[in-house]
Amino acid sequence: MHRFGSWNGALEAAALAKTVDKNISNERLFAGLYDLWVCVGRQPSYSEVRMPHCRYHVATYERRFGSWRGALEAFVSFANSSEAVPPAGPRESKTPTRRTSRTIDLRLRFKVLSRDSFRCRSCGASPSTQSGVHLEVDHIVPWSKDGETVLDNLQTLCSACNQGKSNMHEE
Image 1 (tube, rainbow, N blue to C red):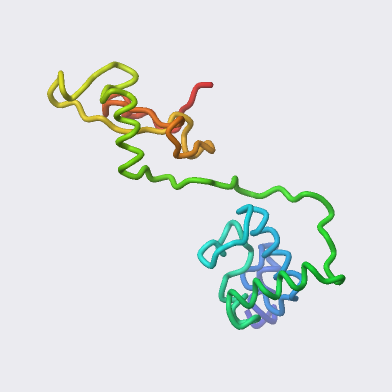
Image 2: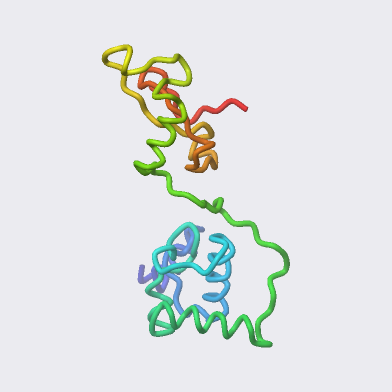
């Protein structure tokens, strides 16, 4: 490391990405915050400031602006000032914005099971007519392929039909 002057110097010599960024300007911090704001589609919360949505750790914002709220207030002041340079064009977020959680709460699970008459949508198996049948609530469009956890995207499947399905989805 002494040969290259710093850890970042060694990474640069090896043509690798820097892992530690020092002396970050307020403009770069605000650009990161802007990207996060666009990605989530609203004011980001403290817990949403993490990779891959945001380039900088929430502690960086807290150290610079005193608190997360202070960082948000400084960002809004900066964005409303004449110093702010609007982005060149619409930025595409790296990951899709999710509206719902991946986990299916008990109320929604019961609604799906009731809607499907407590039967597998694929083979029709039901625990009331066949012993050993275990019903599962499954995403029709897989979560990994931008499927949301909403009533219209959930179905009841028996464990045999759901087993090995993975994230395959036919249009």
